[in-house]
Image 1 (tube, rainbow, N blue to C red):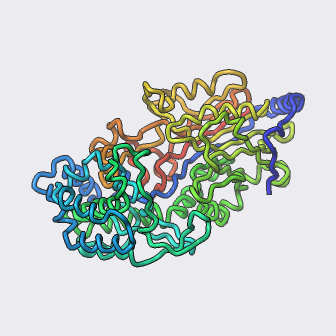
Image 2 (cartoon, rainbow, N blue to C red; image 1 turned 90 degrees about the vertical axis):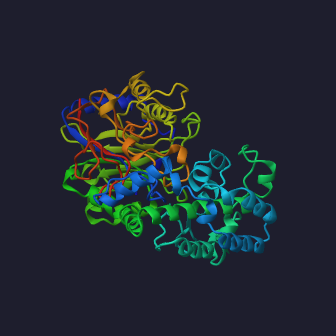
Image 3 (cartoon, rainbow, N blue to C red; image 1 turned 90 degrees about the horizontal axis):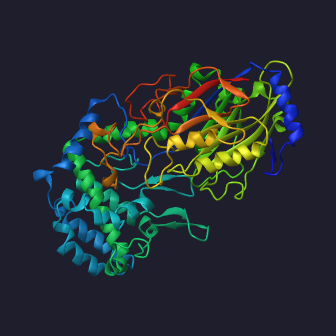
Length: 537
């Protein structure tokens, strides 16, 4: 395996100068690069718009948006979808758990929640969102990974639950059994595995963190949040069975099959296509442990590449950055030609970098030409949602390189529009900062940033945060849509030059189709693949 070196283990200045002399003698040698945020598995197949050939999908998405916008007579009271018998059974089960506040929750139900209109009075109620009364319990129970290797989903529209729910009664029977009848083997706070009912996995909601919550609501937050979650799930099941009876479940299962069950294999299929047969260095982000295993098990890729992962891989969040290096380029055995470089917290200047987000290796590669092996610093990085870690991390990499040419594949999470409050990284600032100072970094894009967009997605109405939802027809134009230039291939300007255009791929076939919402059933990520060829100066 590759060896590992500490942050202080850098080449001396004299060695770097000798290296640069060798680099000049190999002028014209080229290297093919690609970077791809393969995207973590999304537990909600309906959260973002995707592209399906089945016309029923667009019909459903449009119909849901129209109903939410103007429900009219369909804005029925909550008690018509989450019925009184359902409430009585839920109340008895919560009381059997010994929860406090059951009588108070019953009063809230009878005096308020039961009579609210399902859309205008519940789904669109901003206070329910601010109090996290539906989103918090969804977070804990949407999808549960057990210690005995199972993935268990709550019976709801907004996850990968695969049992049909053709009406409210069928849904509630499954939902109640999930919460109260079948313990799951999960880790307790002590770290020991123990069987627990999903209802016991909920936590009280604290007013100190969510001040919209009243003191009375905080005191009964356990039963209140479970009631609100039941109402939320019941409304969505009722709406979809009304708008697309039978078809919605088929559509959901087709998305789940492509983007969850077969996601790792579809990712492998893309990487094994002829369009990427000549890639020398492949930078990947948000890679799951299952995909790492699949990469090493795929004969064509295992034969071609050395798979490099960081020592601090995060098995819990399961989103890690990797580098794949073509074995034919290694200047000697992998253990000698490749060594991990770890950047400590001090080098990263406090940037918000989670475990597994940054993968850095020093590599000795035979890139062709005369003069022997080329030594480089390689890095793959997945930035935070707002892109604020991207510049500090790139700066730390430039300092770490200490004269070595640097190649970086990065999901920088930069944005096309400047945020006046500075809460998100503006793409113009990011590329300018990369190009400034000593040892500047160039990027592979050409033309204006409007042509660099590598994401094209927007939230549907089938998720708990309706304030972030976008109409189907506005998924390309809404300010809430994520159509931004996020992914880059960066390289040392003094060592390399572009040898061709930077290509985007949102099909998995080496081509880019404008206006395609990703992921699709054949392209399993919400980020384009970015690729280019560089030539040694």
